[in-house]
Length: 319
Image 1 (spheres, rainbow, N blue to C red):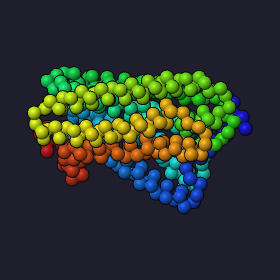
Image 2: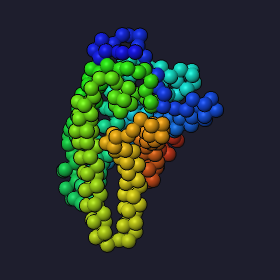
Image 3: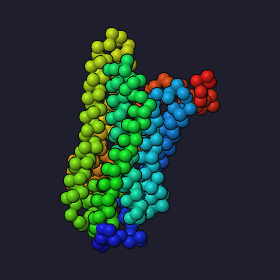
Image 4: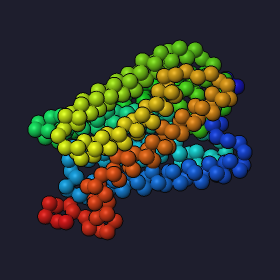
């Protein structure tokens, strides 16, 4: 089989071979993925609705949180529903066009997650280290510009990678993953992938490591500010919040760096490790975000309770 880049036929299909072939394990995987997907979408949607319908939460921090929840819904919806359909129908196929579309949206929403985590860390840094200037620095206009800039950058990065993949020829239909991703697609290509690898290293390194460094610097500044706080209770509360945020950042960035910046061999153990890492950042992190970022927050919990009880406050005068 040799599929030439730029001359793909509409009938060509890849086979997603990342999940177990055993029927019993597939049944467990289906139920596990379905449960995680439903909880992820429901949890994140609840947060978006709670923030959108409660005027007390119309602040920069919650605006970014709602953006993260929206992104997580789209991010997980790019890969998991297709995986569920493939498990249920015992078919592993995905069309060539479908594969490229999945790759583009996966990269766009995945990079958006990274950028938003960095923006949220910066927002917390300004709130804790420069509280008097917070509303001036994080104005509504600046928040909108930040999110728009993030979307523009992620779209351009995703477009670049997708275009470079579309130029490759493929010798094999079998992708050793449960969705179309850069690494597995490059592995099954018989073209020279050096340009793709260089762009992945440069763009991937930039998109992953710069936000990661910004997050670390923000939290180092935050921790040093907390340590100077006079109240022990305030210090405990701040450390508790920062600790849970950093746990998500460590899990997400750890698995993303493992997948994109640490090349792996083509052995079966390596493929299993790559798939496990992919599940962590595509399924587990979007599932954890609502619980870690929001449900430990008393304002969000109160807004969710009001939403579920049908007591929505669209204006300041309503409760």
